[in-house]
Length: 284
Image (cartoon, rainbow, N blue to C red):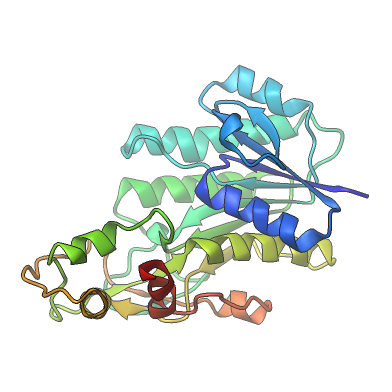
């Protein structure tokens, strides 16, 4: 039988996830991509054009398209409180409302959350059980969305991604190329994950569920080597062959080290286990 995976908010990460699932599935899987302009999706995706900000039309578009698995991977188009609320809470609620019309619930819903839910700034390690008391609106709204999942009647998992980099995401490379970097002091840890590993993690979790395993309600998805922003920018400068003339780069989200032990214990193997391997491919 064909397994249908619906990816709501099927942008960069969602599209890469769908392509990863298709490549691994030997033709027994169907990817249904939902986004405002679905004609931008790959030709081997089933396409639904729908806007999660338009509740009634969005629910109507999804209500007749049941799926075995749902990935909610929307991104805010406005980076303010209203934009985050619409993308991560309202859109998720509208998706859950649409699922109520399906003849049976999906086997799992995965929500792409963020390590922005953590507040720690003392270089400590955090994992899925660590306290979450975010000071910024973005982290608070992500936690609100996670609570929606926890209160729903279906099996759900929130996947907390750290800073995503990869094809088309070259802000840090461009900053370093212009001579801007971070100072060694004060120490500031950063955490990141390559876009292809984001897709790999989501595909891995669906495959675990297909194999009959129960999933945890939360996964922290970050590579295996938290690194100081100074180390990252100085290494990039060395690879690019440029001097760092401005060491004013800083972080706004504290300093913590993200543990991916739960993912590793589940059997996931990172394609890019550290920033060097990931950025080296991008620089090629």
